[in-house]
Length: 201
Image 1: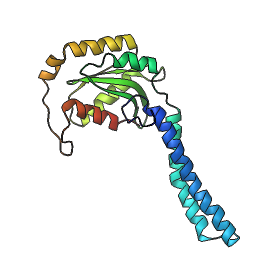
Image 2 (image 1 turned 90 degrees about the horizontal axis):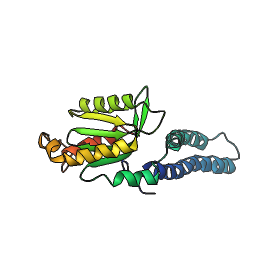
Image 3 (image 1 turned 60 degrees about the horizontal axis):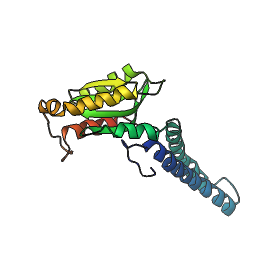
């Protein structure tokens, strides 16, 4: 799970480790500069102190990013295996943390078929209605005519996945795919997944 990519199961867990390492390195560099310049010049009043202070800015930003990931939990393996067994031909993405100026939403998984998107929200702090409305609004703003649904029960979610698989040909038959510049090789569902991930942490 160290190399889990965005949209894959274990993404939050892998990012905690990766970003923790990056944050440590980013803090270590200006601290090293500060200490060595202090020892070399015998005083803190030198140009390298300013360089070290400026170097703390990206380190601090990385720390904020790390804290955001530390607050998130990856989907339990048992639940992931249960969901993945129902993927079939659906396009899926795991562990989306949708962000907006006012509110955020943790979505465990989304399954895409044609213009239909169904998501699983098990976090009690996440408003399913907001998650649905926000994702649908963002996708429509980018030119996608989609219907988004959010469910809070994993059994109902997997049942909906089975239903989408059963009607996949019908749901995909009415989709008008418009290729987009810079997205060569992307199918319609690939684009929906890609843009959904773009709205996420």
